[in-house]
Image (tube, rainbow, N blue to C red; front, side, top):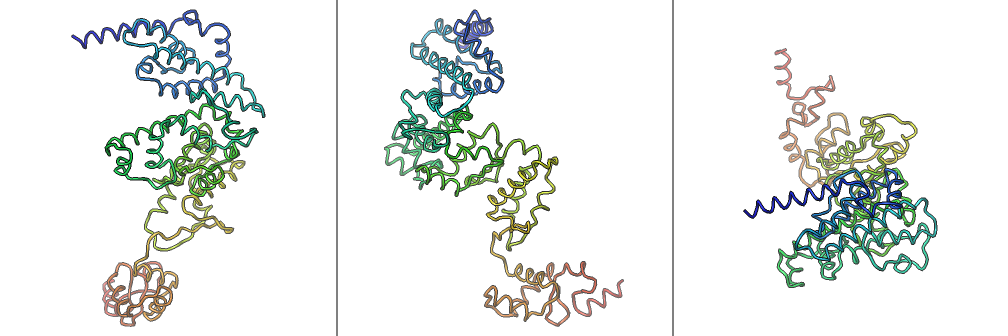
Length: 470
């Protein structure tokens, strides 16, 4: 009976909501007149920014308020009417207090302010820091926020430190309580610090291990969600940043060296992972992230226009394979030969840009550079076994070798301390790789029998028997 009553009430409220939402502009006095004209003049990019701002901001509404906000539409005016109509909707719903209604009112007014600012924000000049301050205040609900007060006596284009600003937002908007900040600072991968174990944190804050774990997971989610709000003002913020020029490059490589440099300059302590997340939020509209295996200390972003020319993800997968497959020895690859197979289309004007970004991807992935001859080294990632060393010695010699010559190289170059007899035992146990030549203690590679017509391994009897079989 109770379920049926709830269902009937839900249908009743939904009908009211739909009727109000799809009404004409006369039903929404706040959207009439001058403000409606402002909305109509927004271009498609600006409208999408507003919709993104609404969707991201709605996440932080209380449960009651959030349940009444419907942003599922690509029509900005319709979304705004729905939000505004939710005020009237509360007049007929019981158990909803004044605070929830005020919360929606503030939410709607922030959206209006955001729209008014971006609609009149045509160009960025040296005096526009006040506009940037207002935008930051709106998206993070900061009552007293001043870039000049918190960062510089005066601000000019190119002087705003991005990560210093994020650090301030981290403490004053992302996570507000000192206890909560201490937990996330010491237990997550957002900061460059030795992470404490949950049980130690539980003792410090007199909580159970499970409660600390729950808080940690919750805070991580909140921080990443709130960080995404910066994407709604990225166009207005980037020109003010000290490192804003990186967003004009064909690619952005974020490594430990990159994060260490920025942390030192801006006196912050963020991890490479978190710095990459910040870069990702601001670069999202123009760049795409190229996945680099499961690394959390290497990130690569490339201009979206270049993805129409080259398959970066496929090349990244190839580099990942090179770095993870068992490789006991260093070897060289020719850069132009390696990259040739993954072109999607040929644009001569963009070729230099593509190649430059791919060279940086190789450097980031394999910790090596392309030399002046166009080669790059794939470094060994495991200690070679003895049979692999012997195989490498024979390949480099490219002809059969006596055991004494093999043993001499093993002793001088690899400091091998056992006897030549032990080396013979290793070779004879791997008949799939090596061949011997009768009783001469001379050895070669089995693959040579197919590649070289004048080489045939085995004893004289083996050779004669095979000859007569033919």
